[in-house]
Amino acid sequence: MKITEFGTQHDRTFLLLPGTSCTWECNFDLLLKPLAEQYHVLCVNYTGFDGTAAVFDTQTAETERIEQYVGQHFGGQLDAVYGSSMGGSFASLLVQRRRIRIGHVFIGSSDLDQASPLTAKLATAAVSLFMKRLAKHPEKALQKFARMGEAKGMGMSEQDFRSSGVSEDYMQHMVKGFCATLQSVDSKSVKNQFYSDLVTRLEDRIDVPGTVIHVFHSTKMGEKYLKRYRQHYANPDIIPLDYGHEGWLGDPELMMEIFRRNMGP
Image (cartoon, rainbow, N blue to C red; front, top):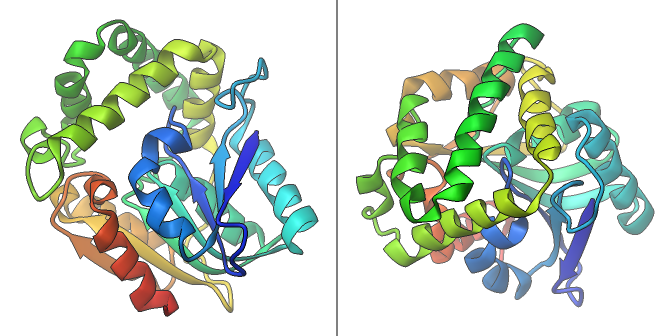
């Protein structure tokens, strides 16, 4: 695991956790500059996705590494965490494990899928094959990526990618970065990460004094995911937005406005 820090002159800390088979460069490239103008930003690249020969093992082990880093460098305390998609599962684990203290946790339209080991193995095999094909044909990735999201009910149609104020250039950049990551990492890391995310259990009604959980909810993802948020978090602050899955990452001004509204200037 590698954590890169920006805006180190600021006191308030903000941890960024990327999504499945992504790097922070892929997920947060537009958000980083305005965020680092106000916060000491910690950008995580998970083991296996950090440019080393190491292989991702389990979500729990990676969560422990994040906790150790925060404990050693920041006294076990963060002002905020944003978890993009699967990164929201990491953020949720950080809260429920109570090893570090976090003021505000922002969950980025995470699907929070959970499955039995058998179901997870079958799903991992299917997704691994799909991702291999995706990496080989990046020019078709936008349509394939959208179809995968639509199949999960995540409001990721190609039309959504090209509308709702999200720039076409940004979404193409995001998908291009995603495909580049798939081409550069060990397939074992991709499989282990996907499988581990499915079988690592999240508690119901997570509630930690001093921690506020905010959920960026894609209204295009519908009620199914909204019910999951209310199942896993005791008092979530739901922030509904008319975008597809994580589409607001292409609108950093909106995100900064939401952060300021909840955390102060």
